[in-house]
Length: 358
Picture 1 (tube, rainbow, N blue to C red):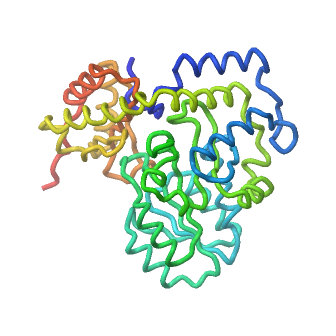
Picture 2: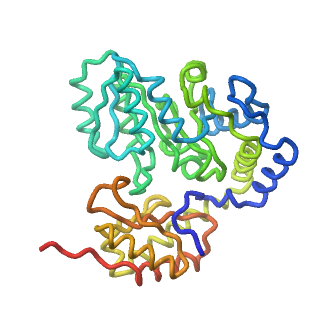
Picture 3: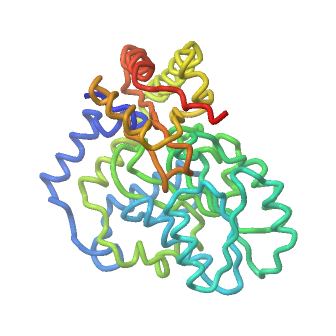
């Protein structure tokens, strides 16, 4: 069975060095101290990982969280959950951002949603906003459509309106940017982002989440973000695996080159397919969606792919809007050329174009 949907974009989760680092840490420390970072869970390894993530993201500091979901869901209410704050959120932001906004609203914040990547609408909303503080939050690389936030436009709006800019780089960490810092780094806008949210469970190939930020913001989050304060610190083998993954990434740039070559190969194959070319947009990231429409069609196509040896699950509401059920394909540097070619062949046999309503 071949995975066509996972988020291990660089194959680091199964890399020999990463596995060995995790195994050695488990043998030496077990899971490590079992308590929150504020009690006794914080070790030299945790500090080393925070420093390396801050370096990658070009920030002063970093805070580790038990997951990327926890980082979003508890940073937003900590930083923005008060009556004097208005949060503006992209309509297609991840569920963890949506839940973080809901928690911030419970604290008194106002939350407004703008249409996906519609920065003209965002600016109109900012112009009429009377809140003392404002924040804008967006995914940088959107997990279902595989498209990017316009970070340059967001940075320009920030300079004009002075809001707190929170960017979730979960799917872009190590995938984009010279150091692997994400889309903001790739666009030369790291300094314009106040809060870089990321995860260790995708391209890093481990587990956990983080917020890269200023020293002042870290001091605040360590004492206010409940997902950090009241969660047991990440286990030692996970920290060791993440650290080693970052070293592998730095040592071997060819891994990321292979990922983007795979993106180009899949793009070329999809464009040549009369059926698939009409059901997907050209990939600009390792994420692509084959939109089939109805839930039944997506489930049937996914089941057929499984019979052909590919795991590509059906994505349905509430993850995506009704009528846009899809097969979400995610590429990895570990995919071979023949894996991609055979996946496209399997998709052509499994997928049927949506019926016209005319």
